[in-house]
Amino acid sequence: MNIVVDTHTHTVSSGHAYSTVQENAKEAYANGISMINISDHGPAMKGAPFLYHFGNLRVIPDILYGVRIIRGVEANITDYNGTVDMPERYLKMLELVLASFHDICIEPSTVENHTNAAIEILKNPYIDIFAHPGNPQFQIDIEKVVKTARDYNKLIELNNHSFNVRKGSEDNCWEIARMCKKYGVRITTGTDSHISFSIGRFDNVMKILKEVEMPEELVITTSVEKMENYLSERKKRIEK
Image (cartoon, rainbow, N blue to C red; front, side, top):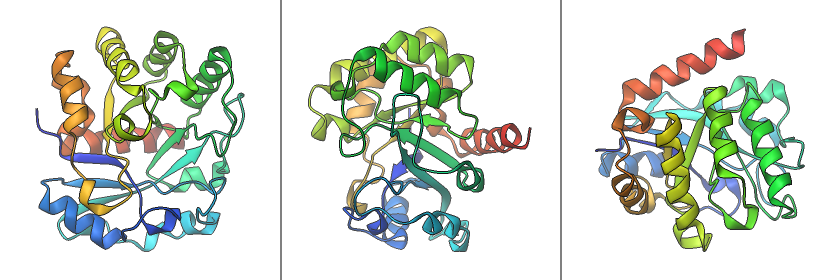
């Protein structure tokens, strides 16, 4: 299995990342990655860009140094009803939207509350991906969340960075992958890179995928065609 799309990357605009869009694209190309999603943090994160940053992503070329650039965001979940820090009119402008928990934006609570928020964001037609769902600080009912992703045809992320910065994520990520396989839920892969050199480096994710014998057809990031088809699918969903 060969991963050619990285759907979770940050630029210097996030406030605590250290590479530009151009640097990310160059490193992606060098690492055999054909597409990257620019998913800078939403404005609730300290140091993150203002909303008009996301409205102006259209100025970035579709292709940079041979790499397709997806214009996205990592929105922050801000309450346990599934609210995020990006208005719908901005989410509509973007090509791919991640949503995730960060303790700087929302205080960890109960499994029930975390699960409810995750379910609500997956129901949101403008949100595509539940990012770093394995974080034990925000423990979820994995089966319920995965089944919701199935019911609403959304994506679950395996986050390579979590293994290093969200201690205790590995067991959850393994179980998430197993549940996605069981219920036929598509997985996306993100390095969550905060510097260009880690883009396209999926050693932790690949280990999980191999251990659970994940069918390649469920890993959306193994082909540009599958990813472009999803982006078209999202566009049609929003137009409805």
